[in-house]
Image (cartoon, rainbow, N blue to C red; front, side, top):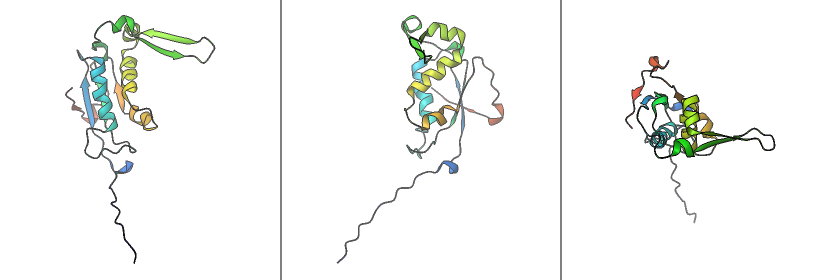
Length: 149
């Protein structure tokens, strides 16, 4: 006598079946860390009921006023962002204050990248992040919805 085992097949979303929304975030007066965690959730698609870990289900996020973002504590002077040139002794350090003055969009992108999981979907999700220093952005035709953070 054969025993039959019923296997429950779960329904997963496919990459081509998704509809992606656009969200607008105003970073003026917001704390960098708290803002970047919420943006990372939307980029991954964790806010949707169809979230699947191995499929990029996230939405697009447009961040404006990145130059007016707030950093708490002594992070402006004590926190450094590092990169290596590839040469011996070629480590470079940039403080948060210098990075905020020089390129505030890079500061927001680095913070969001640090909040993302370290896997292959990270690259695709970060392509959906659009950061602008001022209040203007070229994505008006997508009619982004405001994201409350």
